[in-house]
Length: 218
Image 1 (cartoon, rainbow, N blue to C red):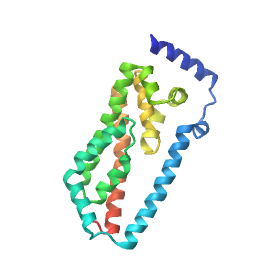
Image 2: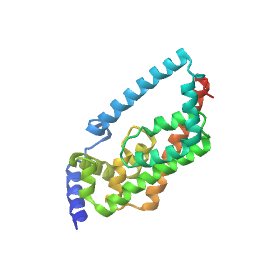
Image 3: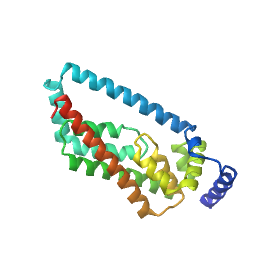
Image 4: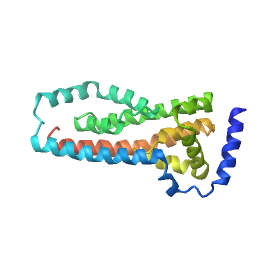
């Protein structure tokens, strides 16, 4: 009853805001936050790579210990981290995946484990939103964000979900709540959660491996 009522309100609001475009998405608070995060992460990454390359830490005991840790516990840690990252608790899973690849974790296993973990996290979001509805979702995002995400979903549907899944800084986790709340098809949700992240994590692993070779870690 609550879901039906809210969907009716959301649909009415959406009709009044049919001009909500991709340009409008860039003006939302969560998109601005995502862009700032992307810029900060990029700058920090460039600085770190320059620092490590300039001073050559590849043979230091500290980095050898880190490498041993990743090789011993990396896959399990990545699996847990990506599950949690998929449930809207930011753990920087892209950076962890790239770092694991940099330190020599098996690339195929890393890609499969990371993608599976993230998909499980998204399924948890879906199930919680499906069962608990709007009261639970409003604990995870503001009413304004909920309305914006609902508008986006009604206008672009699975297309926007795929786009969000292919760009790590975009909050695809928020859309997973909307998918569960609106009771979208579970099979489609799982497939479109898995394959975009499979592509993203494959690129991250390739980048991590290349960076490891360049820095002399592998």
